[in-house]
Amino acid sequence: MLYIVPYLQLFPTFRKLGLVNNEYELSFMAFIFLCYVGFIAGDSMGLNNQQGNNGVLSTSVDYKKYENYSIQTGVIGLAGYGYFIYKSGPYYFYGHNSGDFSVGGYIYELRYFIFSSVLLLFNSFLNKTLSKKGLIFLACILLFLCYDAYIQQQRGSWIRLGVILIFSYLFNQKNQMSLRLTTLLSKYKGIAISGAALALLLTLTVQIRKFYSPYTTFSEQINLTIDRLVEQPELLIGGSGIDEGNEFVTAYNAFQANQVAVTCDYGLKWLYPFINFIPRAMWAEKPTWFSFSTDIFTVMRKYSNIKPAQGSAETGMIDSFYRFFWGAPLFFVLFGYYTRLLHKSSSTNFGSRLFYICLYVGCFYFITQNMMPMIIFTLYMYIPIWVVLKTCFKVRKLQYA
Image (cartoon, rainbow, N blue to C red; front, side):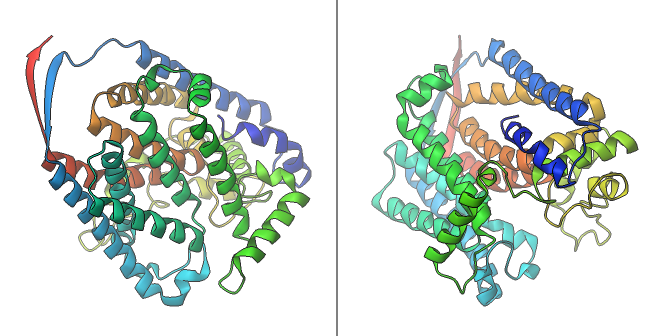
C-alpha cells in the first residue's frame, strides 16, 4: 500500500502518456485497498492471539564457534561471488545486470551468503560477543558490499543492508516491540534519519543507472542524476521511471489484462521457486518461471494497453491477483496474521528474529516484483543462518509455566 499510493499522484501523467487508461481505475484501487485491509486485519488477529510457548527455555551458545561459522559463511559467499566477478572481467564494472551469468545461478546466488554473514556477525556485535577478528571481517565485507552496490547499481543491495542493520538494532532495544511507530521514530531519531537516507539512496541508485558507466566519474554521474531529478521531481516518487517499465504502469496493465482474461491458478505458480532449487542437470526438462502455470506477461501482451518492458515487474499484489483473482485479499489476511506471529516470537527467540529479518528482506522483492524472488532470496539468506544456529545453539525446555 505504501509503495503504490504515491503513484496515484502520477496516474494523470501516465494516462496522458498513453501508458494507462481509466477503464479499470476504480476496481484497481479497490483491489489494492482490500488487500491492504486484509493484511491489517490479519496483523491485528496475530497481535491479539494470546497463544504462546508455555515452556521455559534454557539456551546455551558456543560464541566462538558461532563467530567462526559466521565468518566461514561469508567466505563461501565471497568465493562464489568472487568467481562471478572473475569470469565477468571488465563487464562486471558495466553496471546493473552486467557480468557473465553463465557461471550458473547457484554460484551467483551465493552472494546472499555474504549478507547472511553480515546479519550473524552484526547481531554478535550488538550482543558484545564479537572478537576483534570478527569485527575486522564484518567491516571489510560491509565495505565490499557498499562498493559492489555502487558498481552494480543494485537497489536491492542497499535494501538488504538497510533492513539488516536497522532491524537488528531495533530488536536489541528494550521494549521497542511495544512502541507505536511515531514513538519509535521519535525515541530513536537515528532510525528515522537512516530510513530517510536509505529512501533517498534507493531513488538515486535507480536514477543514476541512466548515467552510470565505467567511463564516467562518480561526480559526473551524481550531477547528471541531480539535474534530472530537478527537471523531473516526480521521479522521486516514480519508482523505476515514468515509462513502460514503471511498476505502477506494469501493475495496472497486468490488472487490466486479467480483468479480461480472468485467469486464476490458486497459487500453483508459487510452488515454482522451490522447484527452481532442483538442478537442471537432474531435470533437463525443468520448466522456467515463465512457462510454469500462468505467465502474467503473456496475458499482458494479449490484453493490455502496453507491451511490458524488459525487466519490468508486476508487483506481488498483482501477482497474487493472478493466483487467486478477487480472493487475493484472503491471502493477505493470512500473510498479515503469520508475519505478526513471527514478529512476536522474534522478541524472545533469536532464530525467529533472524528469519523475520530475512523474510522482511524478501518482502521488499514481493512488493516491487513478485513471489519468486521473495522466496528465493529469503531462503538463500536464511539456510546458512539456520545451519549456524543449529550447530552453535543448544536449547532445552526446563519446565512448563
